[in-house]
Image (tube, rainbow, N blue to C red; front, side):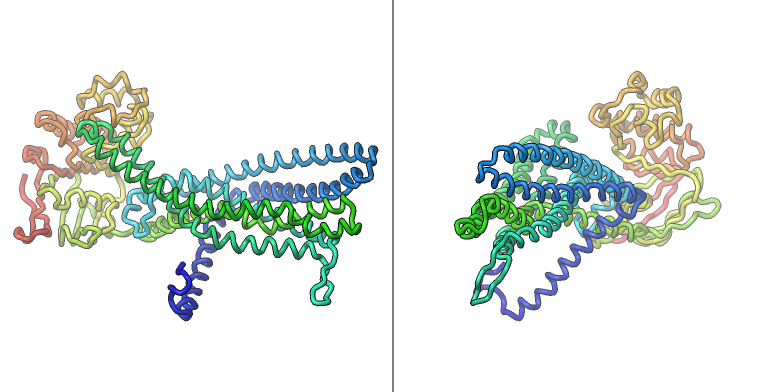
Length: 596
């Protein structure tokens, strides 16, 4: 916000107002988009009933506070009048009211937590499904919105959103009802004030309104930067945690490189963002706490100061003074809900912004899920047909242009070419992962395609489940899985079939690639795409495993990306990436077929 005298002209400030209003409208629309689906879902009846009970309990707490306020009048009057019988009778009444208050307060929290976990579970399942559908978890990296750390948005932001929304909403409802109830009481307890020969009733009520309004204005003015700072803090914390996980998952190569110093510097740099932003939050929170703490302390004495003239004049007794002060504090507290909740509102706003940004990114991916090759059913005698295919990078640079490739059922084709020419990108586009592709891809509507990357994915699961991934191991049986492992040179692992481990950290690169071949033989797909799937193996092992593929999967169409010429013997023909202009600094490639 510009300092006075340094900002733009007044006309420019007026032009900015609609954009601020539009921002608020967009925020409310995003908030409604986040909230509405659950309350229109199959859980709306049970959760609606639960919410109604919770709101009813909130109203019950307000009613009990009204009874406590009446009790204050009677109790302090009994003290002033030294009425011992009335004193003990009111003690008994207090015990009953306190017991009722405790029961309602306990079950309100319990039921609110019940609603919270139901809502969180539903939202988490919904967002996790959206994230995993149509390979959005992969394609999210191409989102222009830059929805960072989706794991944090699903695991933490959803929980924070639900908890903060329920807490703030119920607190707001309770404050509104409390304001209405105690405003009537405070109006009746107030005297008149004289302003310019005008008698104005409800002096205490007007004092509470002015006091809370002044406090709310200053709180928003002082605390407004916290919204952006909390948004950034959540992002920096997630970035730091993500890099810690990367170090843990890549512990072996980091250790072999001796990269501890580099990783320490990287982690330190990430954590510096966390600390720097935290200091900014601390400074802003300190300013807000200076005001809010002083405001809260002044609120204790302010009603006594305003009501003291009526007490000392004899217009009200001690009980009336205490009841007035209590009612004033309830009204002032209700009107000051915005002040007390400002920090949580800032955190909630940041959470909503992160979730809506994530939702918008997923929605854009859903709208663009058909980006890439235009897909059509393959005709008879075709296992794959690619026509007029072009590949580009996200920055617009073209990798491959006007490519055509036709593969017959059961045919084995090897794709070769220099590193970085776009071979793996072609596989990503065939698999539906690469949106920067044009052309037509024809695949059979029936049958299964399996992609075997250079580093196969090994889930943290039993070895049997790892080999059968993504199918269930029960589909094939332990004996069949053990036989395939033996054929692929992994017989020494059969005793571990039932053990759940982090296999990608326990198996060598060569063992992982052997396991990938075992998976391909076990699943027996109709179309198998191998992307440098044997690069970590020696020549003899590579020939052994490819020979096993040819022998065990005679009807499977195999398309392989490989650099070793010896693999051509296992394929019917070779297709090469050839530059259209070999002299170009960044050549564009075409496909050129040749006999194996």
